[in-house]
Image (cartoon, rainbow, N blue to C red):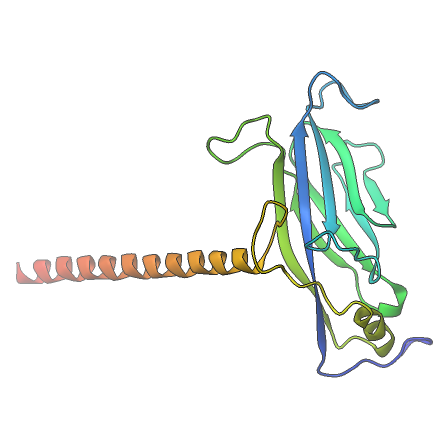
Amino acid sequence: MPPGISKRIKTLSVSRPIIYGNTAKKMGEIKPPNAPAEHTHLWTIFVRGPNNEDISYYVKKVVFKLHDTYNNPTRIIEAPPFELTETGWGEFDINVKIYFHDEANEKNLNFYHRLRLHPYEAGQSKDDEISSIFFDEVVFNEPNESFFKILMTKPGNLLPSNKSDKVIFSQQLEREELDRINAGILEVDKQIDELKKSFNEKITQKQEK
């Protein structure tokens, strides 16, 4: 065990909810200074609590690795809000790395987010703000005692019960999504049963011939 790192708490897991993703808006004739002429959108990528809570008590920094065509494509954000605003014209994968405070003695969390600039839904205007946002949980398995104390300074961010215009994720939305998944599973099972029945009928007809 490295010096200064306390022992880990066996059989204990602590989770912290986060949301990550990007928003984007098509720019008009007025563009930010130094924005290349071919850039059409202003976008922001971020990592934060589901209700915009400050997560800096356990997150040390967030590193966003942009497309290599950007100047200084590796952007390091060391203070909240952990977000980055840029301009662009195309969609690409952004590598996101979340680093935890040294007391955690935890590996960084590494994943990719596909930058979304254009509407995918029918009827959505090209001038509307685009959102591509995901909910996840950071799970610390057997955290050490020092980091556990840090995590417990803020016992956790609970999702609000009901959805509203200001709520991106809620327990209600979670239940609705589970209902849609379960309904989809039932529909798939139904179609499988119908296909099996049709297949068996065709086999029977061939055998009778």
